[in-house]
Image (tube, rainbow, N blue to C red; front, side, top):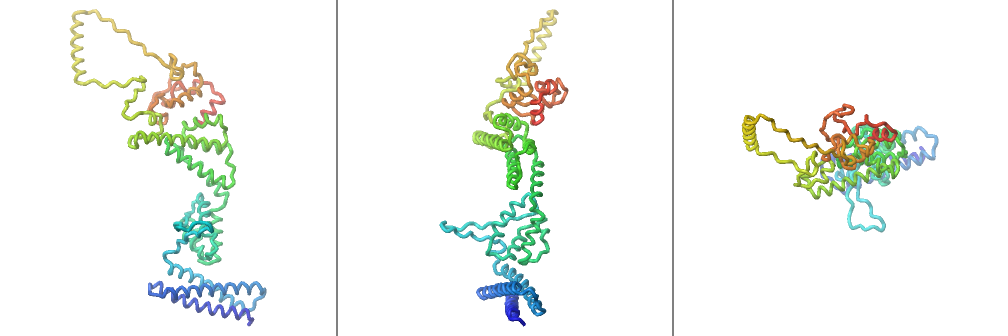
Length: 456
């Protein structure tokens, strides 16, 4: 027998003794028996050192010998089987002897050379991945930082932490792999092949962008939509995608209500039409609304605050009666006392009957007072849809948007998505869709109007 083979044989025999000793220790720990802590740690460390020596000797032997005899093959097979048993046993002993530290791997980070060590950092929690491809990049970056890059941890331990950090579909992908050093890289590759392919991740983020529901005109929902859009856009940009194309700009704009789109278009006319400008303008609009909403909340009080972001919620003073929509500046008249009104009607009827009997000549009816017209666009004395001063549909819509008026009934206490006015349009006979003064059928289509209306 070769000297190198004999040396490996002796190391294997010593490793067998350590395995037998630690197997007895594991049974005692499993039965919750009292064991000497120091002696237990010594046995575990001997097993670890003996296993490492066998691994090194076998590696050196295989490097220097190309052809193996039968005796060498038998010894190496025995060493390989015993190595697997020793590694599994070490994992189990680590769990039994350190229940509070495993599997939560993370220890306080070592102090930097010039940093103050006045306190310990809190323990981090390992990320959990359930197979959602949209969350793979975040999961793997965190797991790599916390576990994968660590050089003081065996790969079999890394595999144990990886198995504990996946669930559902991700757990099924690596289910059945034994906890060994060699299987860690295999498990990582399986997860990357199924969930970490860049083209699949990019397609998933584009699909998620299209599935974002259209926001309603409230500060909370506008922020929800904008944050969701930004999250997907940042990830696509990190993956190397060009996000400055027209189709993506249209997709983003479709996630916001009509009022926001008009503000966007007016602002972007001067600042440009790139996706970057669109994102910056959206952030400016939503942030401004959040600031106004917070100021109103501080002034009015949360119990009286209106959820929808409207002109009424910002301009109405608490306790002050609002003018009626028909007569601006005048307050609604309180109803008369019903009993008093009934009595007055009886007296009036009796008096009128007596006069009629005495004088059969009918009294002339008073001339009705003609209601004064006022155009909402130019303040002229004519109907709104007959205005010649503001004669285009785009110009009229800009005025309504600036004054925060409903596009259907022209009132100021709500916007078109909350309007309950259901009268048919005089011109096109459509029920409750728009005001007659901005009826599309009354305007000649132009390139500017068509593109603006289609986008809105």
